[in-house]
Image 1: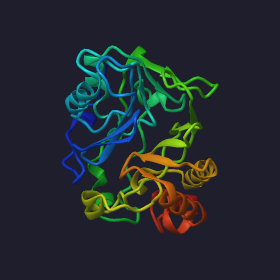
Image 2: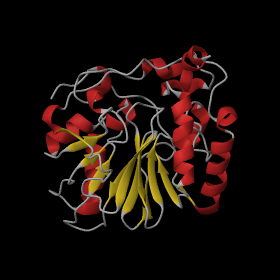
Image 3: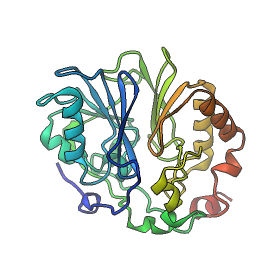
Length: 282
């Protein structure tokens, strides 16, 4: 497997939630690494089957492994790793994890080029309207990685490997092949960065994890039209629980009211007034 040296660089940014986990449902555990969440799917218990959704920040593999061992026991790798998308903060620990666990990695077909060494993402937009994180985003890696034969395309029937009753939904905008996961039984949703519950471009809010609905991170979102359509698709599913890539898990009335507001006022809440991708579309 080939790795980009830049995607291996530790990023010196964190939050008050880093190192904390919350059991959202008996089989969904959200764990925060610095500023991003990974999700463990599976019932806690020694030897139980489980799946990892996303792979955290660079240099996070050991923390993910330790948390997995606490929940599922030692020498019990996941059945698979599912990626919502392949930005650096969602695949940062991936190559190191694959050196520990010999498991398949699943992503949307449009996201596969970024984990098979064929494409790099556009550079973060430091000119975008936003706070200090947006200004500092030039430090964030945008290069792809190559995990070779470990990469697998998600099935066109929208089933999710080793996650019965879940479906994947194509929710592009933040990236071409971004997906969210949805379970009809309890209307639980894992949304990656399709929307977030912390204003990701403001340093103070990232650190404090102040709960606030928002669109995808502004400095890494190249297509605002499809990002808005993705939020509308997710809103129409009426989720009862949402685990986002950034911010705290949310549910119930707060989720309903704020997601409805984001969908109806997406242009004013999510879309920046200026920035490379906004100005280009104009």
